[in-house]
Length: 97
Image (cartoon, rainbow, N blue to C red; front, side, top):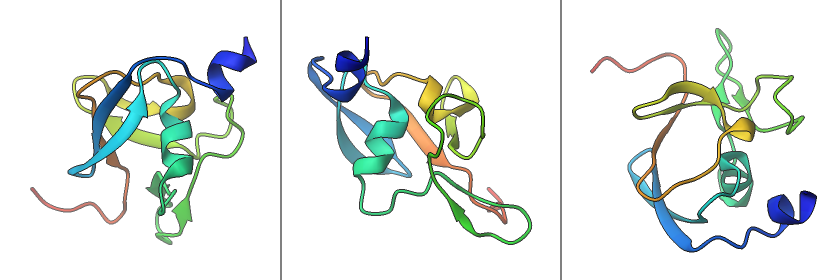
């Protein structure tokens, strides 16, 4: 079970994180992708705006919340990657669009 998580064997895909293209493996956990980035934070806390990142990796702590297009706000440690996925960090204060 863990070998597929630690060493994803899916095909190479590209996802978008905050408008930037990022390399990933099909089927790997989204949180694992964030942990490889230079800036690993997935959200900022409210109201202090302190950066938060994946912590428990089992869906208990909610530190890894992100927004995925066509899905909504999810825990990145509970979501697998697929090609073309568009992800945004949950940064506060929110930008007006």
